[in-house]
Length: 225
Image (cartoon, rainbow, N blue to C red; front, side, top):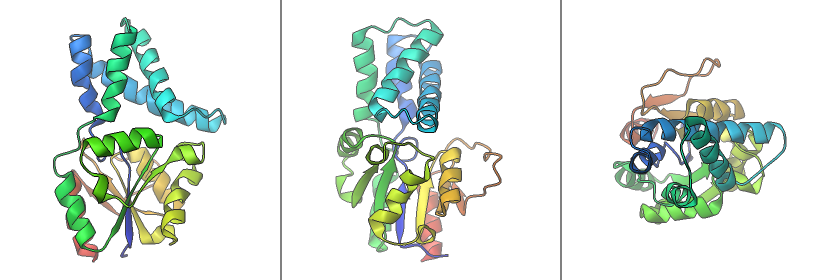
């Protein structure tokens, strides 16, 4: 089935969230990768708990809470300087190297491109600008506008409301298997950027396409158009 627009997840899909481990390693030698992984897991867990229990907080605050917990769990001393240094990484996460070339080619195919993320708009705007990707997307969509996080259907609906077309005419792209499941249940076509070579979640969902990078997405999109 062809699609008219592509909606991208941000963290892990376009921007390397685990690159934070480099800063974490400088602050806590020998613990950088462990801290980055636990921080990310707890961040996502908190978004789910807050959505399930209708106790919304902006993603920046959720991310900070998850960092504090992760450091406590690992017995790491998180002073204000370390906290600010680690949180500041979210404004300058590196984009994956293939991004700009692939996004440019997708735009050349006449596709409309947008980002749909749990992050609040200030976070999205900062990281997109730092990566020089401002011209790639027509819109940056934030879960903050509906005060819920993925996988709530209200978040995914932001994409259909933006483009004014059914979900089945939009391709949703994410590196997170759980996000692919949520988007598929909502009705999007989906492409899983499985950068880590992970198994698919056991939730009776199979993405329409799968690859290891955005280069594979470009090949998939070219076949559809």
